[in-house]
Image (tube, rainbow, N blue to C red):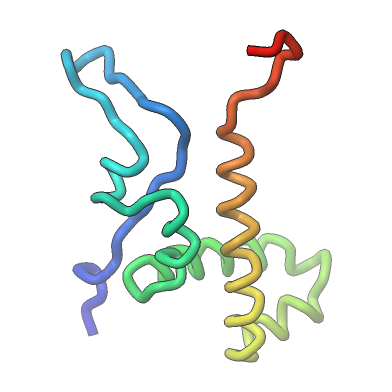
Length: 111
């Protein structure tokens, strides 16, 4: 089964990015995500098109931490239901953290 044509990526950032090398070119999260709005991203991460990439990254994190907690890693790798529960929970947390990290910081000046 070839899956390469079924996998898509999503980006998460705030504001507009301007490419200094390409005049009049601006990038926004919605534009780069082909119209998918910010509030829709957590749901999209859980679709077949995007879920594969997220799960591979999540598995990489678990494997990196195997020595720290072999029992939970083994459970994640061996139990499909546990993978789904953990994946759903972490998906939301990862997105929320990315979004939080990209928010402008308050500087106390009231601006």
